[in-house]
Structures are given as structure tokens and as C-alpha cells.
Length: 161
Image (cartoon, rainbow, N blue to C red):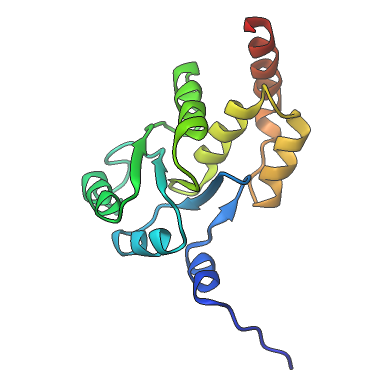
């Protein structure tokens, strides 16, 4: 029987379930305070939280996470959104961070779905919708219910330019 040996960084990724959406952004579920060191060791330079404060009782304190991230030389950004409630300002703020923050970037929410949704909405103008849906599906997130909004986002951006 063949066994596989993971390198330390691969073990961290397996434990934290970090998945890449593209060459700049990876997504994970809510990290614990002690897991931020693993993210820094893996080379992440920017953390993007999409969780509102106090979303549930077992959620780590965002201020403690921010302080720890900054002590590890990572930049902290927060765009708190509720599932499925993404304003145009949220999408544009997410896109701004993707375009301007030092990478690699890791985004998180409770499960990773909000990060994935905002990523897709922010990328709809420059990437085919089907490609976004497939990339999200490859990491276990279904964007099909968001298809119509992704197509609208793409066409609105085209009209603005």
C-alpha cells in the first residue's frame, strides 16, 4: 500500500483546507488565531475577511485576528457581508483589494462561499462567466445560482467602460 507524505506547507493546507481560486486569491473557512502563523508561513501577505463581527458565538474576535495578522507582517482587510447580500460597493471594494493588495491573498468567511461569490462578481467583467463557475466548482462552491447576477455584472461593467 502506497502512503503519501505531505510537505509541511501541504499539511497546513490540508488542515486548513486552503483552496486557490486563481493565481492571486485562495479561500478558506474561518481561521483560528493560531492558524494565522500557518498562513504567514505559507507566504500569504494579505488576509481578507468577509465575516461580520459577532456572526456566531464561536467566531474568533476580528480585532485579535487583525492584530495577530499584522504582527506577522500580513495586511488585514475586512469587507463584512451577509451571505448572498453583496452590494455594488462590496464588489468594487473586493475588486480593489484583489487588484492592489500584496499577494498572495487569502480570503475567508465562515465556509469560503462569500469569498468565492465576491471574487466571481468582481471578476465577471474580465473573465467568462462559465470559467468563473468552473473555477468555483473545482474548489467545491456552486456559483450556478449566481449565474444571472454574474452575467448582469459583466454587462453592466461593459456599459460603464
